[in-house]
Image 1 (spheres, rainbow, N blue to C red):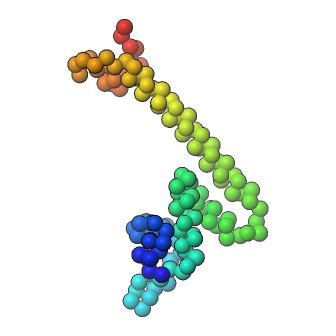
Image 2 (tube, one colour):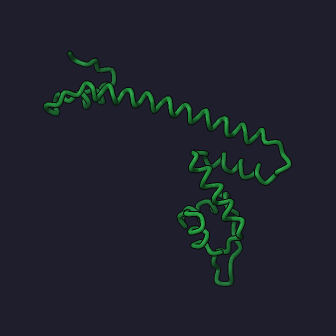
Image 3 (tube, rainbow, N blue to C red):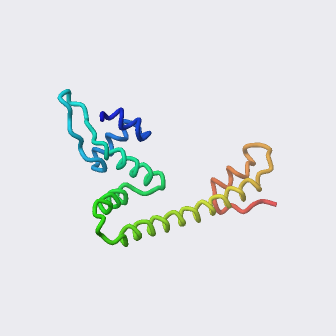
Length: 135
């Protein structure tokens, strides 16, 4: 199948397909007589796997490892578990950071009393994180 067909079958932008090919997540396809890329049917599944993993936030190096591991069905899946566990820890850390961000934004908005820009509590808080609210 040509790149446009692969793109359509997986909902992936053509440039993204080319990028994945360039960095080695997708193998270099055969070329037709007219020099068009000619992807094998199994590349649809591989690209869907990549897109799903990206959608879950896995980085390229982890996806590369997962793809490599998936090509060896006889191997123990403990390496996959380690990659997923590490990714989960990263997601949990980001959630904590987002919670802190949310609390800071709520605090800043509670200080807002309207009025002139020169007295804007939000702008003052952004200019000096340690600024204590004036009562």
